[in-house]
Length: 117
Image (cartoon, rainbow, N blue to C red; front, side):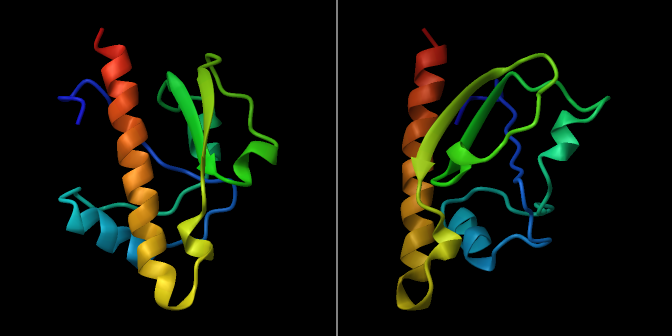
């Protein structure tokens, strides 16, 4: 979406060890490459020698209340409240991931547009 100007990474405070299969399905449905994606801790990006991160965006509804690590370089931070699709079970589970994808895509497009001015 950003024409190669951005690199995005994803991590969590309590990674489960695997990427949720419905998350991978949603990415593939929308043409987003999913090969090689893995569940990882945010500690990977806060450790010495980690890549420099310019902006941190937390996304799960409960993430805003969690203690976050101290990020090297003090990047900008924001919180986008998006319900955790993994918390949806039963027949609505796939719709939960689709909704999260649409919400994230919309916000990412707006973020990119705001940095293109």
